[in-house]
Image (cartoon, rainbow, N blue to C red; front, top):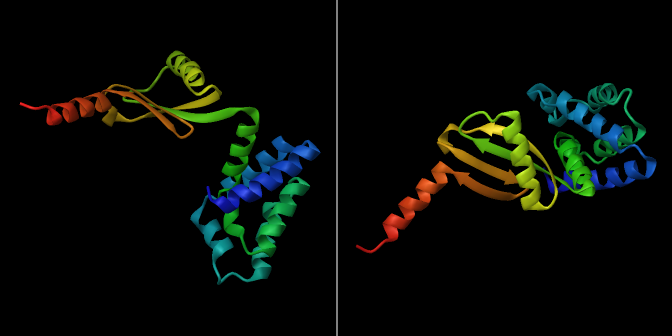
Length: 177
């Protein structure tokens, strides 16, 4: 997420909140980001070989049926030649929404797939550690060997076997003989 995307997301969020359309605009931005996920779509919007008329036609199709704020945002980005912001604005908008609600995203990494009960327990633990409501997703990282590594926002809680072995190795290397 770029600083520019964050600034535009904050502005759109404030307008969407004032109009009571936060969820609608969030859905629109995520749909647009998914439509632009293909490399060909990115090239179409950022390539200097594409004429402004062709680019406008593509953008009109992209925002057809979307909320007025979403259409206006895309129009402003096109006018200011900052269409690259469209590739990360959905994440910035979601971050703004979650911050407003006192939520934070997190990842629970483990050496094996976590069950639903384990993930729920880790979500509760992450909420207590961070003091916020946590939306936790699971990821499998075989290199951890065992245990769990939690990333909540920008904080890392490492309880993995790999981290324990690394700490032990460091202590043994520092020990005097």
